[in-house]
Image (tube, rainbow, N blue to C red; front, side):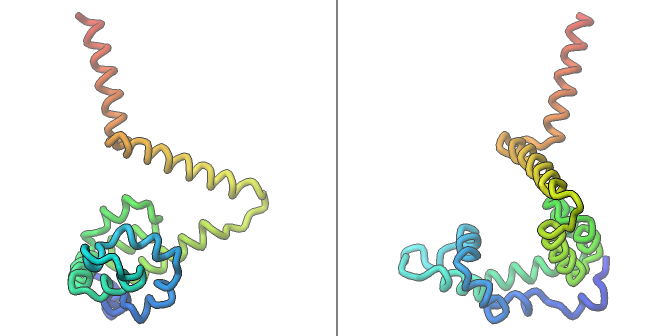
Length: 170
């Protein structure tokens, strides 16, 4: 799969750097969300602040190498099945299959605005949509806690049904 001509010029290493992310990284709530996913700067030193830790990770050769590998896999469309599991939306899934980073980014931005600011004639419809989405997410997370997927649960039910039928014939 080939990326679009617009995307061919976009490299994640050029975009995801400290200069471009500075205003975002200065927000304490963003730092709190990022830090659990990053290794400490120096495991024996707790004296560095959160922003320094995040900045050092973004500037590290490991981050740059990983980002380069991610970019290459994205451009070929190889990451599409993995990204589809995050339920990012149809447009994001299609862009990922094409390896179109610009369209993928636009789809992600559109998804956040679609879910936060949907105009509605009925003031309760957004609440209903949100509740349904939360219930669906809860069902999925309950299965994940048990180490099972929804498909595993369905397969278990089929196995139970098969066992019941087998007992009836014995």
